[in-house]
Image 1 (cartoon, one colour):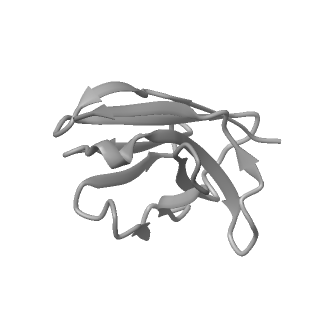
Image 2 (cartoon, rainbow, N blue to C red; image 1 turned 135 degrees about the vertical axis):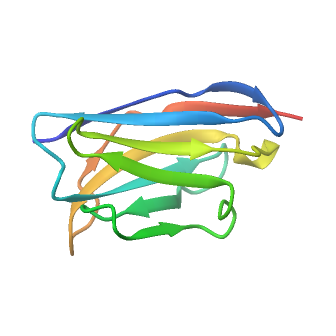
Length: 118
């Protein structure tokens, strides 16, 4: 079983930066693909970014491409999301998730709130 805990959310002005962390426990996630999702009030959850187990492959939603960077440190069992040039529309609860390649995301964190003021 994998437990995921996000941290690093908060309130920031537009144009600012935040770095989210997702710490895994219970099992090494070195061989898990990891993803960051977000859900804004009244909207469906959307995929923000993913990173393969090796870190060699990443994906970004068009809305964050060029502003967000996903990375991982398998030695620390942690995944990060560096968010730069934040916009009010980035306001959401951000969730970390893990999956075995080829399967759905089975493990989820509790989420961390990101609020970007204009």
